[in-house]
Length: 442
Image 1: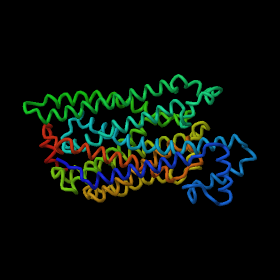
Image 2: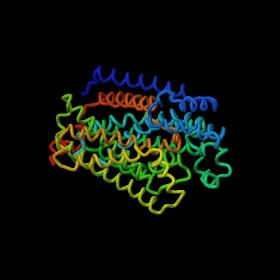
Image 3: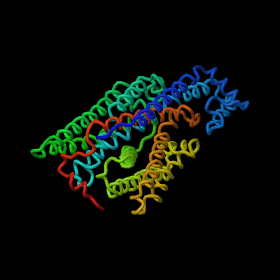
Image 4: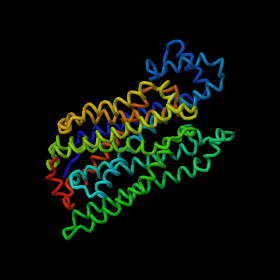
């Protein structure tokens, strides 16, 4: 049985406290009125900076506020006010979604192992089950943020503001789908379905450990995994439209559901590898060998290539066609988010390609850890790129709020996952493929 160390427990709690304090500061320091924005812009124009924005990549946007006053008047400052008020909300949302999608990606990977009756992976099931434990608290937090956004408590989703919908033919056409009540109902339906599968999957897994007469519970696990994957592939696509793509409601991509799936899938698999390697370094899971790590690294490599294929297909087709309402999505990101936009391509494709292509390197733990950390950071930046341009615009910068949001959810994630590891033996001994998995060699 795994025991949660006092050091790891304290570390995760400290992260949560620091993150919560930083986010509180971010919300409290956000401007409340147009006059606050004017004062900040005038201060920046004289080289004063504001808060954690000073000496960051966002300074050029703040300096431009004064220059544009003559052209935009108060309407420009009102737009900037909404962007700066969105900033802590957007930082909170990006971090909440990122850590939730890791748990969701692991849940999908877990279901695939049962549906395909994989023989190599059962020794990793307890790690997968522990990671998916974050699905419930993480999903509840995400649902609360979505509900607040859907009812326009903040300005994250432009379609939630009825005054913006009236007169906009495209938003009016989508109003039957993009409206607060229906949006929140769908979110509850998606999250409820995923959590329900997780509940029964873990329950059956524990029951199978106790069953010495046959594989009754494993067969049940197989059936619900197959059913869940059908449910998942539809609901994940619709959730990606609702929770990410609708930030830019005038734009759409038919690849978007797959694109988000690739991101959450590789992030989940990477997290499985990192936690497994950590547990092995602490003397646990001696039944996991280099071949298991090698296979996880192969998935990390393969899905990174798949993600790149989807990213390039989406980008190339839209850019080459040069249709104004489509290409605007990328122009905004290239002009205002050049470093994170191209940086995440390096982190999510170039780096994994160079590091994980060699088969021998996939068996070296520190190589896998290094690649995994870069991949996770890259996909956080990917979510950042998908959310921030439509919510914060050119007023973005990486500051206290963004870092605090990551620390908050990282601490919560670590505490929940490693606490869940203490709930059951690290080896799913009742699984009929467990001996094959223990002796797996590639």
